[in-house]
Image 1 (cartoon, rainbow, N blue to C red):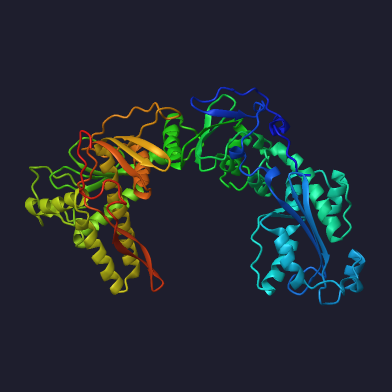
Image 2: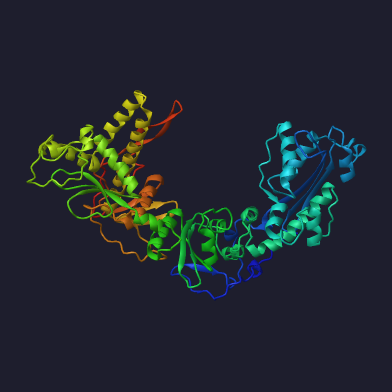
Length: 606
């Protein structure tokens, strides 16, 4: 009954596209498109996930004394177990509800009290039914009603609630035939789909009719690329928008990690994304994706290119490179990159902190890039809270006479130095700047410890809003310094080869070396270690550093140096203390962090 025909790709309809799309895939990708069906081939089980013909379904129907499981009881259970078009078994029994059956229920179902009086009680029937059910997928018409009664009986008898996956033929019918039938009642669907069994408000007849209705709906669902159990479970949530027919584009997508690209009729990339499960991720655009630009993107898309990656890490790296290469207009990351900013400690007579978009080789010390100017300003505020650098933007030359300018507001409040008024001389100010430089480059606790003490003092004084602001600055600075340490460690090494469960991986100057596929043609040049990472490189460097931090791997070979001259940065993550969220320092383990503290691995090859 549930047979899925091999070569189901022939069932996918052609989409009404006015123009023939470009059929050539992007370099290194495989493609599917709406204008032509995919080549006929037998899909592998790995691509199908759990094929529907291998899924065991138990189609169940109950008759009850009323509509509420809280004060009504089961009078009849009927169930049919199916797999691969074969009936594996049937379960049918009347149940003594232990209460009177209302007359209207007797009229509706034909079940009388004299029929159920000799029948077993639910405490005898339920264990047998649960054994019959096993781990099968539960199917029902308005299955929540049946599950509600079964769960209520299970809880009363000390059994856990049913955890099996369930399929509701009402939800599937609503998605597939709602516009063709006046209502979604089981009898209406049975007549419309011309199934052999007519529902009669008796458990076994209704269960058999539901199984036959499901069979007919599965045939229609094949045109939406529903080949596996996960597709079937997701089908009721698919939204009925004009691009729903383009679900056929997902028919050739495997259930594997990788990168996908939506393309328009001219072959231009519209959107680049990564996925742990390519098929499930792309199909989700037709279901619960609420982003406002998704419907417009789907209307323009006529093809989906994809490439399978060995793991999610590889997919993340390729995604970043492809977004930079193709600049798809629906990727929000393009706008985010425009906002990347650096924090700069200037190289003037009295250095100060400022936020800039560009890192220049001007002798200044840079930190970043940050994802936004706001993030950079938060770190700037943290450093200025720890060390009273000047905050005014006045230009003070080597020959400028001090004491002539007015005192700025931060200096009046006592939170900043004021060299303009001569309140601090060059040597004293140089000591402040030196502590900032050492804190940013080598010893982060010089900056973090004053902030942590300030936060604790403000909390003790019950100045909680100021303490919370200090906490946010402390956490932002800690994260920025730790990111710099881990990124600098991998940027030093000319080659790093690691081995993990997915195989071997080669890094060059902190970036992944691909031998083929999308993104493999990216030139990787030795970086200038006196300058911060470029905006187009930082995302990949962070991904690699996170991989080396979070994953188990074996360091197979290092060419050059793999170390950082900064010590490990304390992590100030939130902790609940007396219902108030604060931050407590905790030092990261040396093995867990990329590059370690001052550990060195020197080359040329070691």
